[in-house]
Image 1: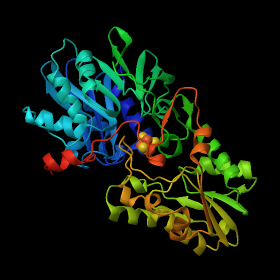
Image 2: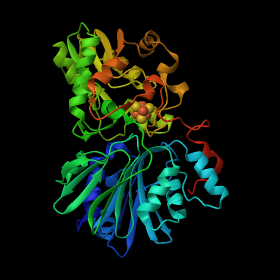
Image 3: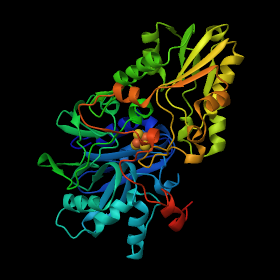
Image 4: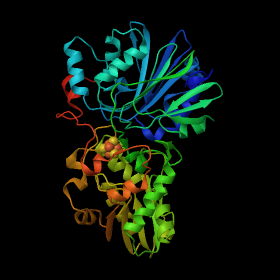
Length: 457
Ligand code: SF4
């Protein structure tokens, strides 16, 4: 947020709206043009900030914020963002969504050149590269730094007087620009803008560097040009359905996915239920197209984080047990279609199918509104390794047996691509076909961490 007297408070609300994108830690940095202050902590936004102390301290009309879940670096407090450092020209803070694929080699080069890292995140690499630039302005420092890194980044950077937003040339992760009175807001999803009454203006374009300061708003562009590779999984699962990303309403796309799924894989059943919340909209689409009644057959406890976001297996198993409860009156003696947005390990769904049968369902037909996930993500989605992805080593029939469903069918890749807008360029769908728009470094995403990182606490 730039140009609002209560910038940190509004960023706090934006983080609240974007809590689904990360629940490990939250942080805000603010500037009153003289001083920059930062507060960050482990846990949910509502737990990290308090009105009386932390927010009151974050004074000024520029602020950036971040919710984190780890794809590179561990969930330590030291890794929470925004990361703030004192560079030659004063304090700088950065917040980053995405994952750099050449982080390991960049980091090794910087370390051998004398850099001392404070975190194990890929984001800090960008800060070190900025600090080393010999160019004249912060914008030039950033552009030079970004020419050295490869991968997915939608980021915001601030100093005492400027806010800069940048998106990688392929535009893997979403980033939107909005306005509120005379202030500007940049956010991963537009649901953040809705909450603070800001108006959506446009996407930050892939490869664009947006500068907001006392002179207003202007754009520069990164030298690298590449075909767009927007993460299609944002439409399937990650973004909120009430958001607009990549210039399109998520709700609209998700309904289309459900309709396409019903067309490709009809089922003979009495009711359609969703695995709430991320499958709700696709299930409505399936119901509309199939004519089978939509019912609420599973109730979700909202006070637990998303299962596959948690990095610890023990937590995941616990989460499944406490997260969903079946509605027996809806399920008993019914033939049920369960619409799920994706299957990662299959363990959650296996548990749910058992739960639905135990509640009296006569048949359980699982329909998945995305193709089988066969490859890991190197661009910022926290999928497990190839070995843990159930569709990597098992056929659809084997997965059906594993989860215990009567039938199982996935949306085809062609059906997926036909359901998302094509007028703005291409998509990354590497997790479904293994065709990566940008090759990852051979040793994988954690190599730098294992080599250099000693946790602070
Ligand atoms: Fe998104 Fe999958 Fe591509 Fe990762 S590999 S960016 S999850 S589409």
